[in-house]
Image (cartoon, rainbow, N blue to C red; front, side, top):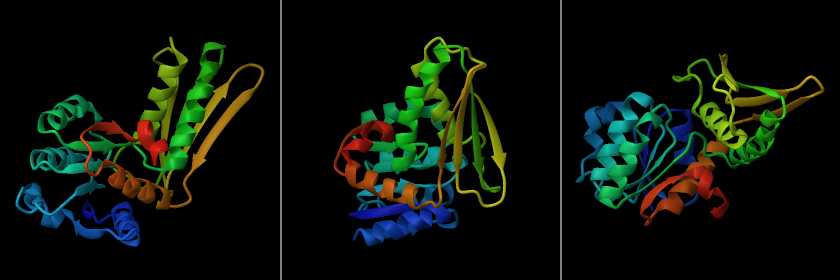
Length: 230
C-alpha cells in the first residue's frame, strides 16, 4: 500500500519504520510541511491508500476532515478529539470512506481493557475504584486517551456506577512510555490490574495492522471492536 504518515514524533517515526518493514510505500509529513493541511489536498493525496495520524489534538480534526473529503481512508491514533466523534462519523458515512480510531492500538492494551471490563463487576459489590496513568513529561493531554477509554469501559460494564467512581489520576514524568493501573478496593481485599508499555513498538505495529485492515473498507470503526480480526 501507499501509506501517508502524519507526524514525525516518536510514535509516528516508529509507525513509518514498521510499515516499511511490512513492505509498504511510505511518505511522512510533519507539521512544517502541513500547515493548514497543505499536504492533504485531493491532488496530493491522489496516490495514497491510507493515512495514519499520530500528531496532536489541535490539528487532528482538520486532518480527518481533509482526508475524508478527499475520499481517503484513515487510521487515527491521536487523542483529544473524541468530543467530535459524531461529527467525524457523519462525515465518514457521507463520503463513503473508512476510518478506524483508538486511544491505543496496542494489542496488549486491548486485552487489558477486556480484563478491566470483567473486573468492573466488583463495582457492584462494594468495591471502590481508581485509575492511575503515567506518561512522559512531554505528553500533551491529561488524562490520557487510554485512561479515558478505560474509565468508560469500566463504567459501562459496572452499571449504576456513581459518577465520582473511577477517578483518573495522571502523572507526567521523565520518559515513561505509558503505564495504566486500575485499583479496586474493598474492606476485604484489593484487585490490581496494570499494563506497562516497555516501548512504543506495540502501538506502531497495531496501527500499521489497522491500516492494512481498513484499506478498501467503508465505515467508522473503533480498534477495540476489530482487533481480534487482525
